[in-house]
Amino acid sequence: MLESLILLLPQVVFEGLVLGFVYAMIALGYTMVYGVLELINFAHSEIFMIGAVVGVEVFRSLAPVIPNGYLLLLVALVMGGMISGLSASAVERLAYRPLRRKGTTNRLVPLITAIGVSYVLQDVVRLIEALWHNEFFLRMESIPDLDGSFMFAGIFIQVKSLILILVSVAMLSALMFVVNKTRLGASIRAVAQDMGTARLMGINPDYVVTSTFFIGGALGGVAGVLFALQYTTISPYIGFLPGIKAFTAAVLGGIGNLPGALVGGLVLGQLETLAGTYLPVLTGGAIGTEYKDMLSFLALILLLLFRPQGLLGQVVKEKV
Figure 1: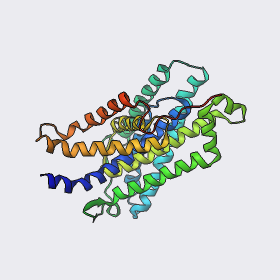
Figure 2: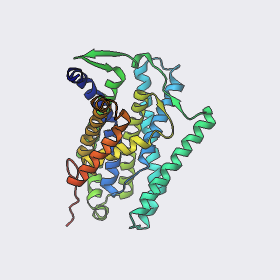
Figure 3: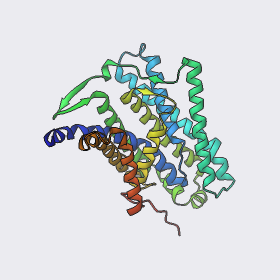
Figure 4: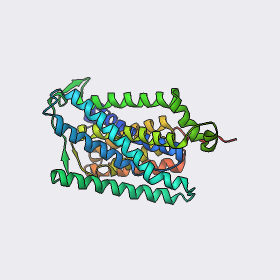
């Protein structure tokens, strides 16, 4: 038994890596918004869901027109990222900016607003899909180019899993470049440190905040397309659990810390897949795969008890 568990370990680790990158891309949206506004944008899970729905619709509509699966996926990623980014920007402009301009200091007000926006987005997508297709449980089209698989070092690797990892790494690298090496990134860091001083230095905080929401939303949208490609079946409600897991990942890594969101996502992905695979085996079936979520959140509780700043620590604003 021990030998079979060890032989299974590389495959489980790979599956955890795939899931971890999905969580990491969603978690970065939470982290960016919190780093600038100290706001937990729970509507971000629905922005992720919008990306997944757009991805499925692009595959459904354009599969007969674009025979190349890789080109079709590129179109879906661009469309999913753009529409999700614009949706996130619209949420900021219509829901959060009025609260910010009124100088609301009660942290519960934007939090409740975020939850309300989340339900609105769910129902809007459900209504659109019900009117358009008379259904809102959607299934990703099967594309032969993307459905292949191969063995490497004893690990069964699906082409779409490899694509998910490569696209995630590329997007996360591009984000780190934008934040650390560009003028927009410098503006984002300035507004995150002190919005009032940044305004005095000629930076438009509203533009920076909207750009932050757009970038975070685009990452969530790309993650949604990749999630739909990997797990095939989606609905207007699929954003809730991945969104909560991604928020957990952001807290695990250190909320407000971009590298921490990546680390937290990868750690959570490994915890979930390891627990889902080994718990039923090690307990003789007494504890099933469904308890993997419990272990993930238990890890969060323990971390908050013993290291509340997260694995990499929270980015603390320095004000003089």
